[in-house]
Every structure is written in structure tokens, then in C-alpha cells.
Image 1 (cartoon, rainbow, N blue to C red):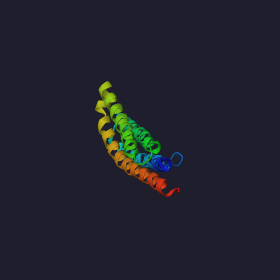
Image 2: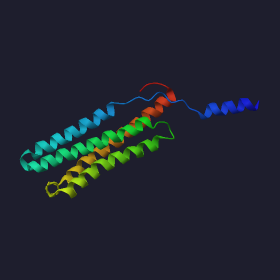
Image 3: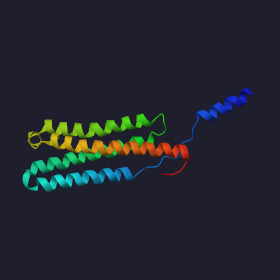
Image 4: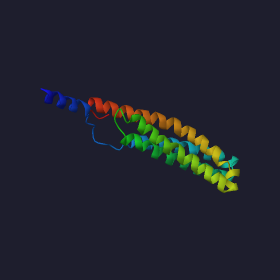
Length: 154
């Protein structure tokens, strides 16, 4: 009788997760959003910005895109209710460190980048990317949770 209870509790404790799937949709969405934002900045800056400021805007957009894409990967692999927060926090490490550290190093290393206001461009793109990434990360975790509970593909 006690063996049946222990085997039942082992079954209840081990929850089978569906196989890991790589989700492309959030990566495409963040690419489109930051691409459109850079296009708007470039369109406005064509007459208003210097050549170095346009390069700074491009580098800032690229740094924020790279941080966002790498920040969306940990929530895809750290799944389950107990790992959902860990996935989002691990993603935040990439999402915050890459753009801020890259812009800081460029700004401190060269006066031309400092005069081109690379940190301001990075902060602008970072704010937009942070909003979109937060929405995408929460939706990703919700879809994994609903997939785990209902065993259907969303």
C-alpha cells in the first residue's frame, strides 16, 4: 500500500513538459518594430542629423535589437511554472547589458560617438524595445503555460 502512495506522489511531482520549440514570431516582431523605428529616425534625421549621428542611431538600433533577440531566447528554454521568472530575468540580463554596455563603451572610448549622442539614441531605442520585449515575453510564457496545461499547440 505504501509503495502505491509513493509511486503516485512521484507521478504527481514530475510534470512532463512538451518538447522545446523555438518560436520565431517574437523575433520577427521585434525586428520589424526596431526596423520601423530606425527607418523613422533615419527619415527624420536625413536633413537634421550629421553623418556621425546617423551612424550612432544605426549602432544604437543594432545594439538594442541584438539585446532584444538574445533576451527573448531564455524564456523559450526555461519553461514551466517554476522557471518562468528565471527565464524572464535571464532575458533581462541580455536585454539590458548588451545595449547599455555597448553604448557606454563607445561613448567613453571615442569623443566622436559622445558628440553624436549615441547614449541618447540607445536609450530611445531601448525604451521601445523594452516595452515590446516585455509584452512578447509575457505572451511567450502564457502560451507555454497554456500549452503545458492543455497539451495543445497555440
